[in-house]
Length: 244
Image 1 (tube, rainbow, N blue to C red):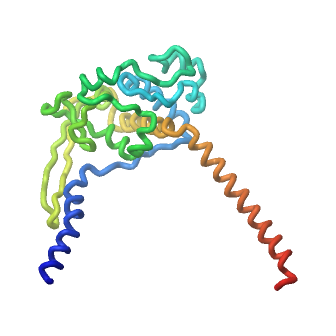
Image 2 (cartoon, rainbow, N blue to C red; image 1 turned 30 degrees about the vertical axis):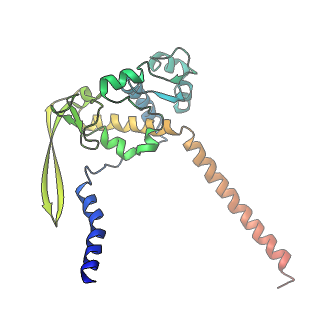
Image 3 (cartoon, rainbow, N blue to C red; image 1 turned 45 degrees about the vertical axis):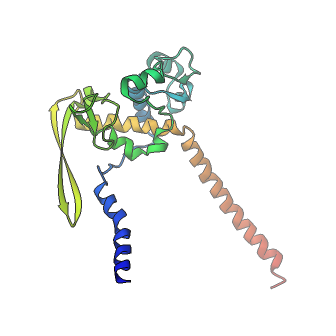
């Protein structure tokens, strides 16, 4: 009986130990602001110039960008590289078959990637690429090991190397990540973090363009319901005052 209890105890601890060993890179909080129109516009520009070459956004139309303060002329002149009409969706010329041949996997559509992955994951992922000669692309990622996508923003961030040091602490495996800058980019660390912040801010917006308006309407509805509740309560007291 005692041996059985010990076995059950060890089995219960096993998932926790495995989780501790596979925690991986800690995610950084994404400092996004859905009300910052300048950030959203900068993010849209980065998306169109760096992401839209391989990744599409087939459920997002160009004319929706007017919601973040851009004019139709600005959209047509600066962001529409793969479409003729402003009402078209953000499709990409790269075929899935070609993408799978070049990268080993077809680049996914990014319309709702922020809802699937989360803002913190995207913000950390785009800032943790490093050079790795063992991979096909020559790049790897601390958040997404052995990722097929190369570092498309490397000219901005520069090239970095990552040393992962493993150690034991309290019976658990601990990973320490040490970064080294191999070559500078066009932006310093603060500027690059801002660029990624703006891009993630836009990706979050693109996943649900009406989110800000929906939340605003929700607050108004809750306020209206609160006022109606007060009147309903007073009316109830008036109807039942003679009964009590």
